[in-house]
Length: 270
Image (tube, rainbow, N blue to C red):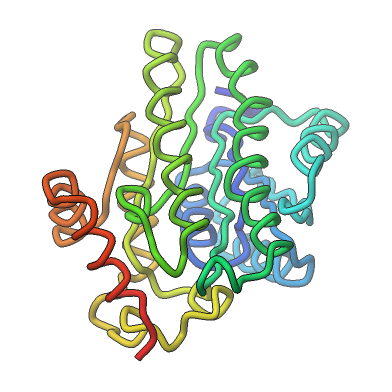
């Protein structure tokens, strides 16, 4: 692994690192001795998160680099890697966590918002992976964690574009994991169910049935730990929670029109 000192295990780049699952993953990596490159859209929130992580670190050799960048803007992924090249930072682990959704009938929702979502959830994720994986293969070591969702396993009325972007993340990652067998590089896809975060507010779905069932929402600490452990073990796909695993299995056996109707009922506003 990269790293100037023996007890520095390597460097991990995490997108969407200022809160939620991304921040919880950053805590786990920092605890295990990884240097961090944190990427998020809001500079102030990113710096606050970095400050907290530094205060938690027990080693002065663990560096934390922040790169404020909006990955919903084209070329932002390349700009991140240009900055890494400038600072001579090599990435051992890539965590594509950033993403957002929107809510409503497709014929009523805002195209600009959806265009940014597609750029963030699909294009930037793919480009960051592209820029990282070649270097990883050359070094014969690397790990990639792409955060999808249980939404990846079925269509999602009222969040049609979001569900479709997460299906892309899952299928792209599974294919890439297969291609990379024997190279020393692994790809893991984390597929959490609904999780306590700012996602519901951003997607304007705070009044949906699922958002108003606290018991149905996982906590980001648990999701991050499940994803982290799976990444370290080189698993291809991991779904936190028994109910989420069961649902992902059952949708494969259920007629698609029934699945779509069920998902719509869950996502509808109350």
